Image 1 (cartoon, rainbow, N blue to C red):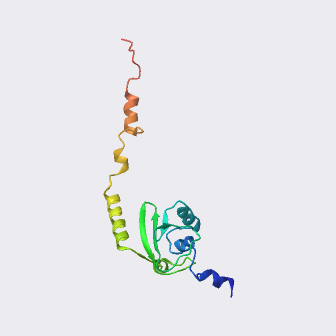
Image 2 (image 1 turned 135 degrees about the vertical axis):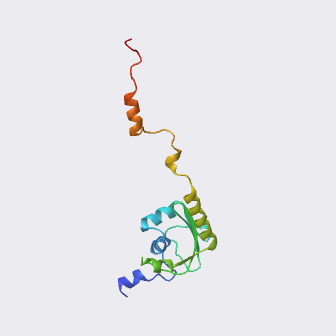
Length: 142
């Protein structure tokens, strides 16, 4: 058996959780996947998981990508990161997860512009000109 064949096909029980999350394109690197798992942001079947846990078809994985929580069911196994369409075939997102993601996206879209809430900050060019014209001396010669 060649070393390449062992890397591309999952083991008898399945790939490691961190490898599967990376192959399914939830995280850009395996290191990021390991970090998120370590922080407890990834659960498998409702339980905290380790990066080395083996993934099996049918497992329910709940994870957080940035500010978005997702819940997916494992539909396929892979140890290699392939094109996005292949990666999307490795999981099925639950209807509740899709609805929650769409609600969160809509809430972000309707949220006020953060810069408009700042009442006072660095003066604008126009403010600086007004300050330059202002008489700085409190005592007058009169």
